[in-house]
Structure formats: structure tokens, C-alpha cells
Length: 422
Image (cartoon, rainbow, N blue to C red; front, side):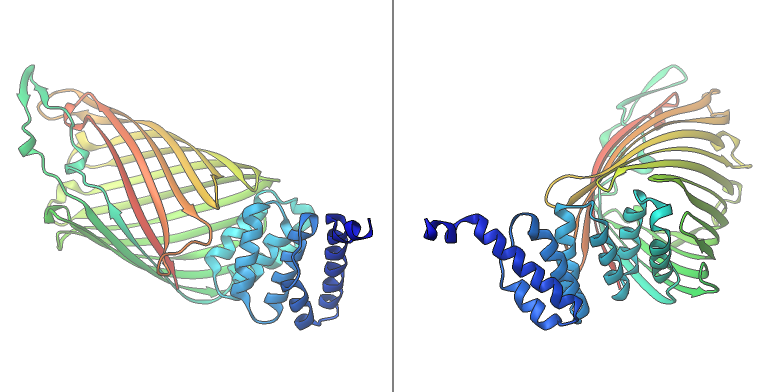
């Protein structure tokens, strides 16, 4: 009986609990070396497993091994995402390593469901630590892009013009072929106060297809001011961009953007933005366009593992020289974010809308009207990299119905994007 008691799981649990308390005391005393040895050489089970792992992560962080602490904390959150203390420690470690993008993401996950009255001081301190850090940042992406045709043109084989049928031969459809997209963003931020910062960002990108006529190049400069508070943020920026088609100058855009985000209640966020661009085309002056897009979104986090949002948008474009191409377009998007398995996260959305044009379509003498819908999903895995790049896989299906058959189409595709922050 004595031997059975000594070997019983109850005795092992009591022994592990005693070891955990000893390690906890060593950490409190600042004796991290002994605490690390004790925690690494003991197998903790049951209710002590996660606290022991968290304690070991704290030891790693205090002894100059932030990468080990980050990995351990991410492992804990993949199993138990609702432990605030673990996520707060991860935010601190990411911020200490200069990983502002990851720290901001984890902080937003934390504030999604936080009781702001209870956690106000701590979260404000974290937000300042991340949001007001000065200096340069650099990020980049590489993406495989699916094949497409001109303007997602009609998928019909026969179209009617003036009541007469016309056959569209497959050889007449220009296809881009598979493409490669790549780009980089360089930014600089300067703190004007604890909550106010000025920033500038220069980005460039290319799209390279097997059919050179579809190749695109672009560059964009943004500069603005950003105010970050615990419960809200405001942003105003100016935008200038230049676009090329197959290395030939195509258009110049000048405009601006205003945006804001407000956490008006626990786990509820309201955000909105308005962007206006004036675009001038090099080859055709009559194609100059003024585009304005306004959107507002309501997001609710039911837990740290599931959030939903609804977004309403309205876009209008005016082309003085081509009034039949001017339009107004309302749309609605429903979105959801949730984990699947093994640390894989999914962002999914469904969008529906319509587009009504302002003048008669040339040759058909009708007002063009489009209705469209799109289903899109993107998938990423926590703490997963390939050669230092974080992959995101996206799939989509979209369809458009139009009373002008040239613009009647449906398409399905998948893209793979690799991102990197420096």
C-alpha cells in the first residue's frame, strides 16, 4: 500500500505543486537561474501545467531570452486564449523586441474584450509603449496572383447588341496568365506627444504577368497625423500615388483620408473612414476621375476567439468626359474572425452591392446597372514562418450581373501572400 501511494498520480501532483510553489518563490526573490532549472526539469500536469509554463516564460523574459518567452506564451495562448496575464506579457515582450505590428495586434485582441474601466491604466501604458515608438520601419510582401482577363470582362459566349447575337471566340479573350505581385513599405514615425504622432510612408509595388500587357507598377506616398487613446483613435493623411501599365506612365492620383475608431463599450468597436482621390490619366484627359468612398463598421468580439463585423460602404465616381462611366455604389459586408485548428486563424467575409451609372451606355441607349457579390476567406497560422516570411492564403469567389452584358462575369481564385516586417 505504501508503494502504491508513493507511485500514485495524486502524490506526483502534490510533488509538482510543491515544486511549482518553490519556483514561484524563487522568481519572487529574483533567483531566476534556480527557478529556470527547477521549471525545466519538472514535468507539470493538470492545473499546474499552464501556470508553470507562464512562470517559465517570465523567467526567460527576465534573463534575456525574449524569443523563448514569446514562443512559450504563444503556445499557451493557442490552447487558452482567454488568459489576459499571458497576453499582456506577450505584448510587453513583442514591444521590447521592436515587433510593433505583432504587439499592436495582440493588444487589440486584448482590448476587444477587456473591461476598460478595470484595465485602463495598464492598457494605456502598453498602448503608449507600442504606439509612440519612434523611428523607421520596413515591411514587404510577395504574392502569387491568379489569372484574369481584361477588367474581369464578360464570361458569356454570345452577347446581344442592338438585338443581334454576336459570338465571342475564346481566342479573342486576353488572359493575363499567372502573376507575381511584390511590394515594400518604408515608414517613419515621430512622436509629438504621448498620444500624438506624425508619420510618413513610402510604398512601391509591381504586378508581373506572363502577358506583359497586364503588368502594373505603382508608387505611393502617405503622410499624416495619428492620435491614439485607449478608447479611440483618429487619423488624417494626405495621399499621392503614381501608376504605370507595362512600364508606361498611366495615371497620377492626389487625395486624402480621414479615419477613426471608437471603443464605445466593452467588446464593441465603431470605426469609419472617408477617402477622396482625384485621378488624372496621361493618355486620355477626358478619363480624369474624382472618387469618394465612405464606410462605417461595427465590430463585436464575443470572446478572444470569435469576432464579427458589419460594414456599410458608399462609393461614387464622377468622370466628366465619360458620364456613362460615372456611378454610385452602395454595398454591405459581413465579416468573421475565428480560430480553426492548430493555431490557424480564418478571416471570412461576404459582400453584396450594386452599382448604378449616371448616363446612357454608348450604343445601347440604356443606363447600365450592376449587382455583385463576393465571398472571401484568408487563412494564417500563429507563429509560423517559411524562410522568415509569414504566409497568408486567400480564396475568393465573386460574381457580377449587369444589364450591359460586357460586364457580366463570375470568377474564382486563390492567392498566396508572404509578408515580412523588419
